[in-house]
Image 1 (cartoon, helix red, strand yellow):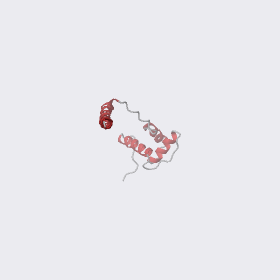
Image 2: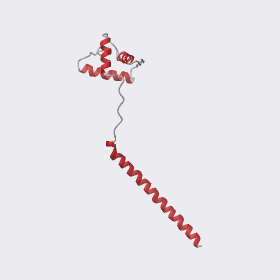
Image 3: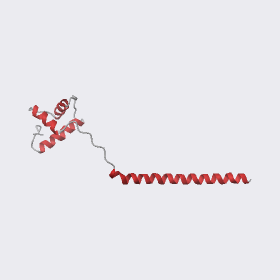
Image 4: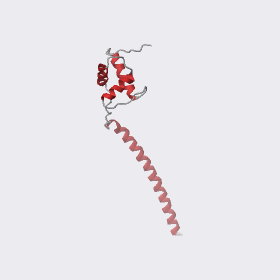
Length: 117
């Protein structure tokens, strides 16, 4: 009978230890989240990749082609200058990049918008 009590006590202690272990695991997870949140501002950010299409390249394409061009054409010729010829469709990231650059150039008065609606 004494042996059964010892087994029973062992099982109870193991269950209590398991509960404590679970509590400690939860506390450790909470602490690691807090540490990560506090350390986040001090972790260096990864540098952004350099854009393929830059304002300088767009300006070069515009100088070489004095005729009116669509945004997609400018993007295609810019990529061709880089040795990466590619078809550029509306909504493509290269199209959007060239469009942003053209908007900046138009605001500065360097280029004109040919399409007036």
